[in-house]
Length: 174
Image 1 (cartoon, rainbow, N blue to C red):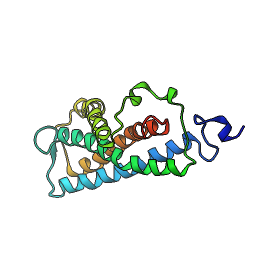
Image 2 (cartoon, rainbow, N blue to C red; image 1 turned 90 degrees about the vertical axis):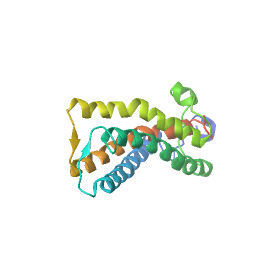
Image 3 (cartoon, helix red, strand yellow; image 1 turned 180 degrees about the vertical axis):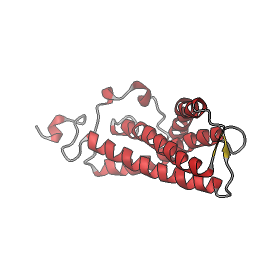
């Protein structure tokens, strides 16, 4: 059976869904982790420690990072993936296999990015902040803040990448 005979729901022989998603998630984690390190350095380059809460604290940073990575990742990958889909050879997934919540994301890219960012703030950021709280973190040294910000930047990239890509590969978002 050829790819055309298998229908629109088939994964083309040119690329497997697993290989595609693994590559995209790794690239996103590296890019978002690097930006996390860069912005962490920009925040603390004056040498001050970063408190857990309050102005300039970890809580504000984690929430802002969640929103911005969700928004910007969606704004950046959507047109790139649209172009790649138009050129062909991209893996497809059956819309029925898509988690129901992903099928509900808005078609508008900006609105979808905002929803992703708010979702990250509501669902992922509290888990990260809970880790800091459970560890008894009152503040972080500049060096620790920089690398930890890189880690949670990468984590947000890992979480948001499949959420941004899968609905498009399933044809739910154009």
